[in-house]
Amino acid sequence: MKKLLVLSALLGLLALPAFTADVTFGGDLTYGFISDFSQNGRDENATIDMKGSVDDYNSVAISLKGIGETLGTEKAVITTDVGAWLGLPVGVKLQWGFDDPDWNWFGDISVFEKESMSAASMAEYWGLDLYITAGMLEIELAGDPESGNLLAGLAVKEPIEGLNAELYWWQGDTAPNVWDQSQIHFGAGYGGAFGDFDLEVGANFMYNMDDVTVPAEDAWAYGLAVTGAFSMIYGEVALTGNETDALNRVYVYATVAPIDLLKVFVDAELSLADGTEAFQGMEFGLEFETGGTWWAIGYQINNEAFENLNSPTADAVTLPDGGLFAYWDINY
Figure (tube, rainbow, N blue to C red):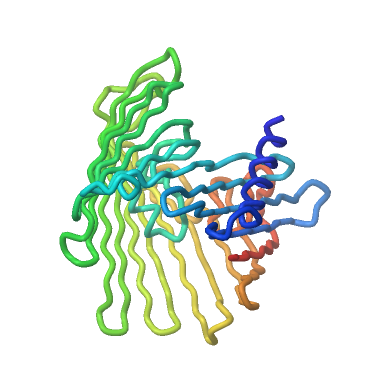
């Protein structure tokens, strides 16, 4: 039934352009697999991202992710620009549906997209988000009626060109009927060009306001990412840590594009935590463009704790030694 509802929603969204000329429609499709060519050593995933603008005030977005035979909803929302609709002097938007709060500078900057690495994230939920903007300030209020989780945040957008900062408070029942928890999250990001060199820095910090012992959680955690691009070379270094291991994981990523349509990439995960192996895993390969489609082929080397970075999907249980992977990505 869940898959049927999801597919019905997809078909409805795909049909929007047929009913009105005002609708704009676009999105992103990806599919990939990884295999070590053994009988059970194969995994795959696919994503479908779609966005549609219904009119001047309403837009919809749906994101699905499938791993193996499982198809799940990551996002399904409708957003109404109430401020524009009513002609208000400030921006007011309402977002209703299934999503997570759209904030996290570590996740925005880092190519690894490991938002949970800094523990500064909130899981998807069914609920209502309210966004109010005035000049450089944005206020976000989010609530989940089912669990009672609440989030309130303030963002400052570019008080200095390229600089953004966010401060959020979250209160919720993280495990129903077990304990309540409050957290403070701070995030900041900066991006700018210095001659021919482009630089981006993103960071998040999480602090637990409650002494959580069931289960035990770190009192604080952080994530930091720095990226740089010069000519045909791009690189990133990311670091995460927490109360238990102040220096926990290091992630490195680099690409070289000898021609516009071709990239050579390599990434790796290293551990600085006590009692762990320094080398966690790596990937390398080629990525090339054919029109609006990106293709990639590469190889992944796994350690038992490797948290696959760019391959379609894999883990230590399914593919303990890694394997060959390939994927394609279409923007439409």
